[in-house]
Length: 109
Image 1: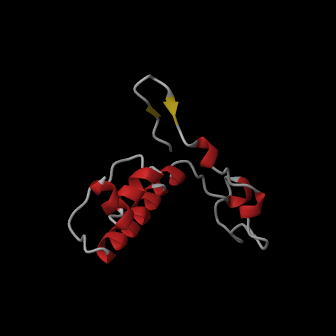
Image 2: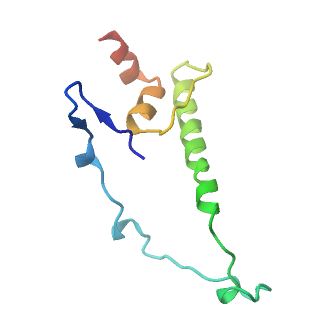
């Protein structure tokens, strides 16, 4: 999710030209999908399980993985104290949370 921003004149600011929509080249060459054989669920198609909340519930794993990556970056740069994650986790927020040389130089400007 992108954070929407406007300048002081109300002009919409977004870096949409840098966004690349995933395409068919991101799918592995060898991509195999199978259904669970001999499933006991006879009410659904091919005995499949419903999947409604799972994608929404599992999306937090992306946030937690990014938080762990940010914490690792901060640790490499001697910043092991608590830090806050603000959602949505935009590229800018992840970059600034890392606490690396680029972030430290920004505060000197």
